[in-house]
Amino acid sequence: MHAFDILGDPVRRRILELLADDEQTSGAITEIIREEFAISQPAVSQHLRVLRDSGFASVRAEGTRRFYAVEPEPLSEVDAWLDRFRRFWEQRLDALGTELARGRRARHLAGGEPVRPAGSGADTGKTDATPKET
Image (cartoon, rainbow, N blue to C red; front, side):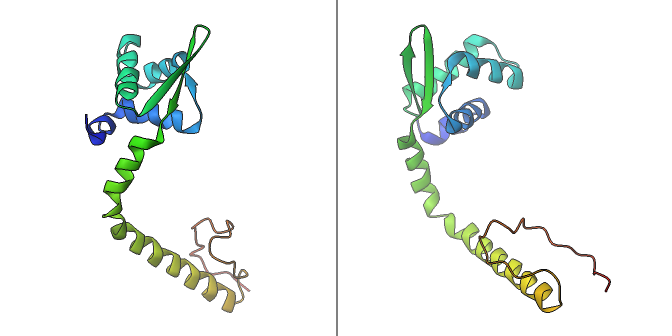
């Protein structure tokens, strides 16, 4: 099965999102997925099996519990495919960064907030569109 066939299903994408944070027990995954998608436990188990069989997830047994974890290898295939399209959004993100820096510089020159270096974590991406009274 092709990687995009796996990722094309919203339930499987959600399971991978859950696993991206940390490994999860099958019971915890089932509980969340059943609540969010209103599907049966056997249906969740089937999605877990597809992820496991396709290499997107691995499972390890610990007593009677089964822990699932995301496997990065198939995701690198997706990343490689996306690589040729990355230029379409990276240029726009670079342009956005330039505009944010110009806005910070303009506010600083107008006596507003101090200029913070881009990527400092201090910029939330929000700007104050209302002029400040002096």
